[in-house]
Image (cartoon, rainbow, N blue to C red; front, side, top):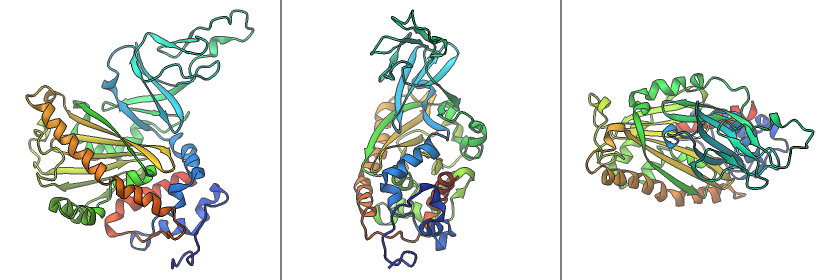
Length: 388
């Protein structure tokens, strides 16, 4: 019987704005050795997901890809972030980000990815240039409405070390300020001097928070990956290693045996020649970016909510620019990416089971292990964001 709830299943608070007054959240706020995980409805409730959209995804800076995915003028790609259609396009003056919504009837003016001189709404033919300005509105010449202001809604965007970030927030904190601590920890890997070698999309049957927590979960390595001695060793060493950073970020540097390193078949990065071959790390940047690296490659895993019980992980693998043309690199890269994919897919059943379990009326949040310090840090930042 849970000492906080008396065995009674807690329901979501009637008002999400009273979230900080719920006993279960007070338990998560305790110091690690006394703290408990979040209640199940945080991972299953549609109301919580809608509130997350407003309080987190519509406010934070979000990593949405690499600048080299759009290298030429006219290159574009589209995506949806919690149902919000977004268009990225490279114009004469750099990358632009817009709400992918025609100013007439709301249809998306672009789909997929490609190269274009502009964007034409398929519904009534309204046409926009690469800056998002309206250039043609057929049969509107007798309208008394001033169409000069009918540009695609612009979103703030920026490129940092080759990564494209955007925000729906009209008055966000400076991106450099948000990334400062994370940058200091991982600048040694020089992502600005790397290039996108592979991009893989993996859909999971679990809440997005389960996905990001699992990617920093050292505790599960002891039970789920017992056959891999190096992986278990990483869990042991990691209990004291994580550095908890402001804004919910964290870093964890450790030694990985060559058999455990995700890039064991790849050459060491030129700027890491003076570092041990066993160099490896994990990291997290709120709200949804997990980072993993070793001496051979960088991996950013960006997790997007699709539904309360579904999420999508986009795995970006980066290599030094000069490595991409090396002999045999395709085979080595395929092997390295394959290992990462298999690791995620092997754990998919566990994530699906957890999603099912927290929906049970018999689930009470359990205490956190000493190996779950990063998770405790991240979910407390999540509560900060949700409660304002």
